[in-house]
Each structure stands twice: as C-alpha cells, then as structure tokens.
Length: 280
Image 1 (cartoon, helix red, strand yellow):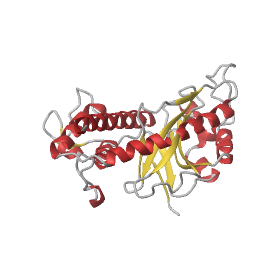
Image 2: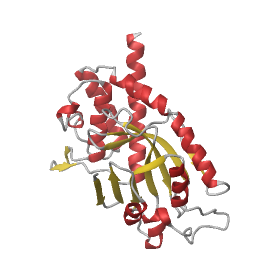
Image 3: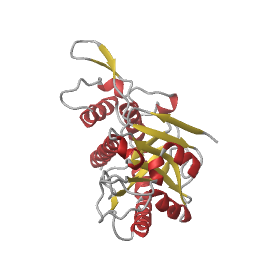
Image 4: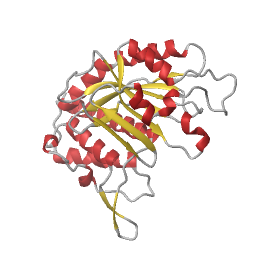
C-alpha cells in the first residue's frame, strides 16, 4: 500500500492507493475533525463536522483516497479551513482501472468559506492525477443548516448517478483522433483558462509535452489529460517580460484546481461535440 503526503504553500495533501483511515486524515487534514465552527459563524450556522458526514458516507460504501486542506493566513482559522476529499464508492473501486476511476469530490469548511459541495471527478492512474468533471454535471451544494448528513448522502448518490455519463464522455473522447493542428488548437484554447491576459504564457507546444510514453496517443482523451497535467503540475518553460526564462508554477490551491479542472473538462466536451458534428 502506498501513501504519499506533502505540504505546499497553499495546502496540505495526502493520497493513497487504499482508503485513508482517520489517523492518516487527522494528521494532514485536521479541519475535517473540527469540534465546533469558527467563532465568526452565527447561531444560524449548523455545525456538523465533516468527520461525521464521512462516517455516514463510509457506511454507504464511500471511501476517501485523497484529502487536502487549504492553508490560511488567519491562524484562528487553521483548524476550520476549507478541505477536499476525493471518495470512491465500492461499486467504482477498480472500475476501468487502465484509464481511471470515477470519484466523488467533497468540499467543505468550518470557517464559512464553503458550504458542503459535491462534484463528479475522475482519477487517472497513469499520471496519478485527479480531474474534475465540468458544468455538464450539476454540482450538489448543501448549506450548513437542516439535515446536513442526510442531504450530503443524498447528494453523493446524486453524483454517483452521473458516473455513467462521465464514463460515456471519457469513452467518446478516447474514440476521437486529433490531428497535430487540432491538438495545438486545444492547447491554445486551454491557456486562457490558466493564465490571465497580463501573464506571460508558455507556448502551446510545451503544454502538449508528453511526460511518459503512455501518453503518446493522439486521441482527445489523452490530449486533454496531457494538457491538464501540464497546466496543473506546472514546470512549463516561459519567458518573463524581461526575457528571462522561468517555469510555470504548480496549482496548489483547492479553488484554483477545481476551477481549472472544470473549465478544461468543459473545453474537452466542446471539442468532442465539434468533432462529432463534423463527422456526422
């Protein structure tokens, strides 16, 4: 069994190829176990620790394989910060292992920065990278009031229902072959999703750099994954305004990671629709 953990400037991350237990989660993502809400929350805020929700989800067959917690500037919010869990249902563990497995992404905080939120995701084993499916799949949000645990469980099953659509989208992308020009166009279209107009951007061909031989295929699914990995993990060369060579940074923040991943998935689905219309 493999467990990897690291600390970055913006979050603490731990992941494994087996379900994470409470000791592992508590060591790296303590805000999951916050006994109370942050002092800034009003009496209307219904505090239910994420750990309580996780216990209920485990009873329903959902297990966490990755967890991360945002770092905060206000030290009083350290034990209440936004956190993310990536869970797999027992029906999905090992599913389509060669390409990846579907995951439910659970976001929450106890400092008011986030409600309970659930999204559809996919984890690709070859690059150990997690994706977030785009706006095609409706996010589920649960406010910190009322029957939180029941509502989150209901939301998790709602996301689970979308997994067939996720798999269909993935298979459709894998069946589409892109020319070199089309791959370049996809990479060019992805750059504004990661970099602002004021930022110096890497060249599109660098975003298409294959990090391993398993990614040498020219289908849309592989191209999408290559672009996603390079934009998220960083390390791509670019020139500063003064002409000096620098490298793009890794995206470590939870919000930035989710936002970029969703946008890239939506872009890939748009390319899928375009190619299918041309072929029809």
